[in-house]
Length: 339
Image 1 (spheres, rainbow, N blue to C red):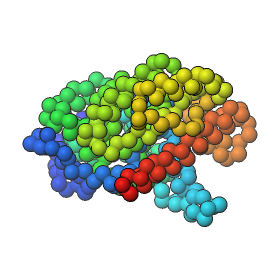
Image 2 (image 1 turned 120 degrees about the vertical axis):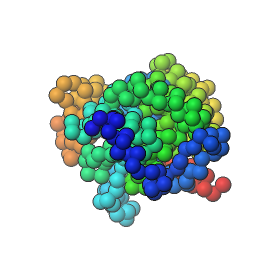
Image 3 (image 1 turned 90 degrees about the vertical axis):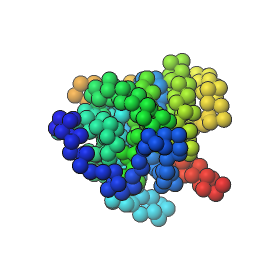
């Protein structure tokens, strides 16, 4: 459907008819927006201003592992599984790798970010598609999120000032209560989309490689974080995870951690788990005709022993990281609620 036709359809529905909405108004551009922040503890984004830092892989795999944990429960602790658990993933990247390569959206489900762009333009609710049981996706990709978004964000800033950073949240709120967890993938070198993602999130997960470019990306991300906290006061840097790194590269890790501490200061926290580098994983999940990483991990969990040991090791890394993400955010949430 052409974008203009979508716009004409949506203008028939006013925001006041949508449950759980916030309204951005140019008349209150200097005032805080009334947002139900205490209902939004379940929204995470991955952010690093450098490409290739591991944001997309981290979001895809943590989202899938969270969903599996929710549905499976923990029989050893007497926690039943929830067959109705639901997770939402939002792909804000113009490359659309999360949509196509990680989560394997069908061609008919992939509008290459058109509906997402329209929602951001109009302020109307996001329109997810279901890519596997319990997992919904807002597809990304296309020029909407590369060329047009910069101009759109500039217009939003002109109209709403800092409150423009809440535009994605405005589009997400009407459906946010339908999900147990929500994960947002962000693009590199796109401050507008980074800030929109942070404005809609409660937690930031920061994947980073140990090279200077990736660490510089963390510095740029932290600058956007400071700006967005003016309108999203509970936004929290949950932690840094070293991505695609050698498992025995102790000195390299220490050097990277020292630099990250200097960059993030009091906000610095590093997850214990590193996502190890594996040529086998890279080859089997990225070559032509290969399976996405999440599909390889499905095979690991089904007991397939034909996969290389390094694939199983990276799977274990993501399992441990997922546990850390859940536990740390729950702990901080509890501390904030008690204070």
